[in-house]
Amino acid sequence: MSNLDTPENERFRDSLGTMTEEGKRAWVYPKKPSGKLYQYRKYVSYILLAFLFAAPFVKINGNQFLLFNVLERRFNIFGFPFWPQDFYLFVIMMIIGVLFIIFFTAAFGRIFCGWICPQTIFMEMVFRRIEYWIDGDRGAQMRLDKQEWNAEKVKKRALKWSIFFIISFLIANVFLAYFIGSDRLIQYVFEGPLDHISTLISLFIFTGVFYFIFAWFREQVCIIACPYGRLQSVLLDNKSIVVAYDHKRGEKEVGRAKFKKNEDREASGKGDCIDCFQCVHVCPTGIDIRNGTQLECVNCTACIDACDSIMEAVNLPKGLIRYASEENIEKKIPFKFTPRLKGYTAVLVILIGVLTGLLFLRSDVEANILRLPGQLYEHKENNIISNVFTYKLLNKTTRNIENIHFKLKAPKGTIHTVKQGEIIVPAQDLAEGTLFIEINNSALSGDKNRAVIEVYSGDDLIETTSVTFLGPRSYK
Ligand code: SF4
Ligand code: SF4
Image (cartoon, rainbow, N blue to C red; front, side):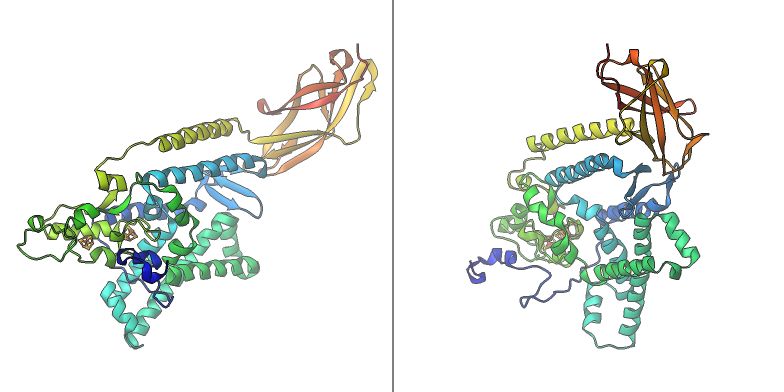
């Protein structure tokens, strides 16, 4: 269907609110939001920003609270260190995270985008507010953009861009702390950044990326780049709660119409929407929510606040734009916990249960005991059968684990390590060595026997593992 064949009221689907007919970027100058929901969003954003900046610098038992060191394959989540050996836990966490997002999107639309997403938080609650402070509100910003370069414009632009750069640099530093660790970042700062030139280059690349996103690319991230935004159309149904315009009430029989003092809108059949465009002017993605749910909408709630203040001013009930499902607007049916949501919840509960169990079972030390390649067994004096193994002990904690020794739990026998003296596994490191297991032939039940080994640190049992112990084939 060509653009000309599209009905007038569907034309908005053929274009993006942030693009001109010639395909050029249409800059959005959203009006400064205000209202109850904006106030709540501010409080949420303060908490999240504090968390985001603090998380790499907070430590639990010496472990960074959140660390994603991809290059060295070291991850800390809520202070729990994860090693490549724990990858299965990481995968389960990722699945839970993805399911959680699917569940929330199916139930509450893009609530994550509007309230929690770091892109929205930084854009709307940090950079945009600086812009309002320097350039003024929507009208002043539009005028400033159009006006010739004069002293005022140069001063405002220089101030704004410098502050944007400094904040981008700060964010890049925190971002780096998540990747290389805050201790290393601080160490590099004190040693002199020029001594760590590759990290310094990465830092400036990150700064450039953040600056580009928040100074220029902005809402395009949500509209064009974000995969989650693209997913929403598959996840939403007519029962999902989204920021929605109540078209039944807004249009009624006659449709929306400008407000006239002392008119009886009820009797005239006019809708409650007074076509003031406040919901459009306040929208940071440049759309008209009255056209229905659109991919550009990040559910930021700015239009709810704007419309509520208009409704209050013209003495009409608030909530013409509100959190509501299509079903709720069409049939006045309240939110229901649908079978789909029940299914998601059940899967989530099971996965969280499995993850909790695995986290409890996970030990601080991982022992890997393997047969020395090419070795079978040795028949020694007094009918003793001896097998030789190599061991690798991985310490996942940030403290040294001392006084390591091995005990054979079953069958009855002894373990001798080749290393003389105390075995210590250094913090976040490996200890390797060789050990012999000796078992009396009479305790063996064939050529292949399961030997259970306990690893102790002092009197504390820290890991249990098993190996295959080889004996003579023709026993008994
Ligand atoms: S703010 Fe409310 S009344 Fe004004 S145009 Fe938007 S929906 Fe209509
Ligand atoms: S339509 Fe409303 S909720 Fe959606 S992005 Fe625009 S202002 Fe925010």
